Image 1 (cartoon, rainbow over the protein chains, first blue to last red):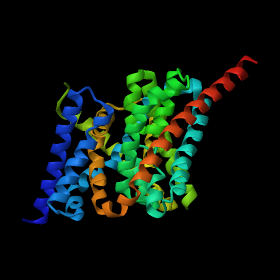
Image 2 (image 1 turned 30 degrees about the vertical axis):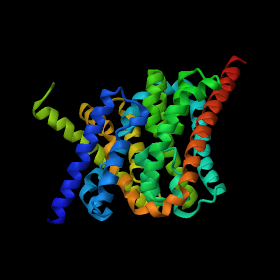
Image 3 (image 1 turned 180 degrees about the vertical axis):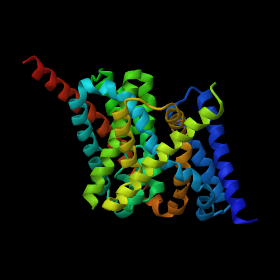
Image 4 (image 1 turned 60 degrees about the vertical axis):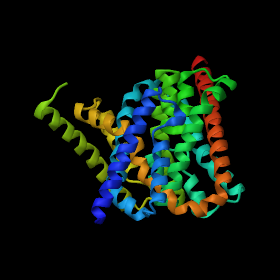
Length: 227
Length: 128
């Protein structure tokens, strides 16, 4: 069988498995721990390993999906724009907190990784941990991390954030939905944002806003640090 | 559902807007030599355009919602790449889990407390 056909088979399999997992996720009421990308990754990693297919063959077939990360990242500007009107009354506290959160997001991941003895590309892969996955993968590619590790770390971090955020915020007495949303979006990007919408529409809008702005801020900050 | 050539035209305009912003971002990043993905300045450019025009075109809204609704699918190729690194990463798996849990909780808490503090300060300044 030619390489093109094998590639097409991987592309179709990936889309099909994801579509099935997505339908299942929606039927079960969209729980954060069963985000469609997690079971999809498990199935495809198992398939690639079991068939001894090799990453090159898989990547050669699925490049159109990887390419779509770019336009999808640009598309985040649309929900960002829709949420902007709600931001204006608390613009300066929100931007200040975003800057603090961005620094803590990078600093805590890199600092802790360093304390635990991690180094090199593993450490760099963890730097964009708090950022939305498409931006994090792009950052990891550009700063010399392992994009695959970054993708997994970011997705799993998002799930952790979505699960711990409501009890953690309650423990600290944070009741303002704007503060809840901004913190969740800064720490746990899109997966947290989905969870923030469960708290309230206002928390969701602020989470989406924080996710987009923190993604841009983290990219610029890491870019400036590493030039 | 509105269909026909106008809908397709609007959708194409949306796709072109996204690709044009992405291309502009890539050119900028390569020109300046910044180690960031071109999609980030591309997103900021589109955001600036939307703020200036104060509205989102129908086609752009549809295409964006479609892309963002399937965002998880686009991570799969990058995520599957982990098979190449399985041997290297197995010895440090626990450390990576600790970083994910602690860093996420710390970022969440500090950001929330910072915004609460800044809002209190802003309110106090206004009432003075």
